[in-house]
Amino acid sequence: MMKNILTLMIFIFFSRTIFAQCDSAYTYYPALPLNVTILSGDTCLSDNDMVVLDSLISINDLAYGSPLELGTQTWFNGRLRFLVSGNYGNSSGVNDTIYSLPDNIGNWDNIASLYLEWNRLSELPGSFSHLSDLMTLYLNNNVLQDIGDSIGNLDNLYFLDLGYNELITIPESICDLEFLNYLWLFNNNLEFLPTCFCDMDLDWSGNDNGGYPYFAIGANALCDNIPGCLIENDHFELSLDQFYYSFPVYAPQNCDNTTNISEKGLFPYQFNVSSPYPNPFNPRTTLDLFVPYDRRIDVRVYDILGNEIDVISNNEIYDMGEHSLIWSAGDHPSGVFFIKFADGIDVRIRKMIFMK
Image (cartoon, rainbow, N blue to C red; front, side):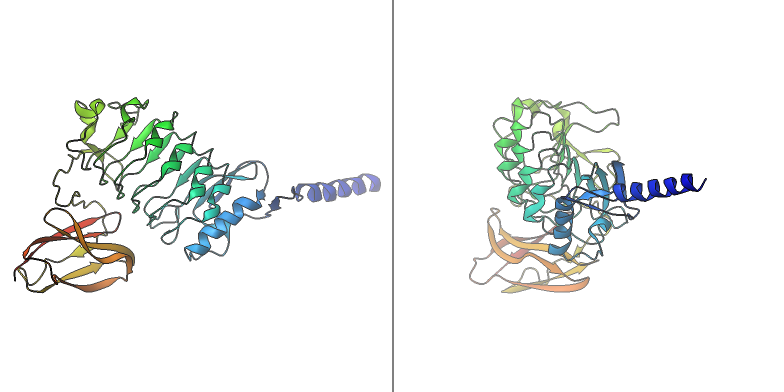
C-alpha cells in the first residue's frame, strides 16, 4: 500500500515538473487572465510574441500590468493566433488608443486575425509585410493615408477592411492577394484605383450569407476614373453602417473637387465645430472645437481649388473639452476657403470667406 502511494506521489511530482517545462523560446504561465484563450496546447507561450505585445503597450503608453492583459487574445500551440485590439470603449479591445505599431510586429508570423480598428494608426511599419499567416485584417477607422506596397506580401489575406481612413491611393500590389475575398474601401479619399483592379478575383456585386458585400467602395472620390468592372455595379456606391456594421447604406461618390471628402456622422461621440466667426472676416477668424474625449485631430485649410494652403494641426492631441482655433489669412488673396477637421472617424468642413 505504502509503495503504491509513494509511486503515485512520484508520478504526480514528475508530471507537474514535465508539464511546467517549455522549450527555450517559450515561457510557462501557470495562470492566465480571462481575456486569453488557449485554443490548443499548454500555457507555454512564445517569448517573441510576448515581446511584441509588450512593445505595443510601451510605445503607446497603454496601462497594462502584463502583455497578456492587452485586448482579447487566442493562442494556438504556444503562438499568438488571434488578437482583438480595437478601441471599442469596452473590455474586448484595448483600454486606450493605439497610435503606432512597433517595428518588431513582423515577429507575429503565426497570427491569423488582427483587429486594429477604431485607433489612430497613420502608417504601417515595414515589418508588417512579414505577417505571412494573416487572413483577417481590420484597419478601419484609423487615419491611414497609405498602406504601402508591402501589403501585397500578405499572401494568405482573405478579409481586408480599410474603411473610414484617409487613403488617397491603393497600391498595385494589392492585386497580388490571390486569396482576398473581401475588400472594403468605403469612406476614404480615393480618386483612383490600381490599373490591375478589374483583374482581381473579387465578387464585385455579390453578398455573403450574412448580407455583407464582398466589395464596398462608397463615399470616395472616384468620379472620372471609374474602372469598367464597377461602372454598372450597384456596389460601386455601397457603404456600410460603420458603427454597427448592421445594414447597407448607399453612399455615392463625392465628386466635389473642392475638398474631396464628405462629412460623415456615424460615431455617437463626435467632436463638434462651430461656424467661423466673424465670417466674412479680415484678417482672422475663430472656430470653437468641442472634443468629447482626448483624441488626435488633424486641421487643414484649403482654397477654392482644393489646394492645401495651411496646416493648423498635424494630427495633434486635443484634450477633452472646448478649444478655440484662430486662423489668419495672412497674405492670401480675398476669396473662399475651407477648413477641414478630421480624426479618422469623423470629418467636419467649414466654409470661410476672406474679404480684404
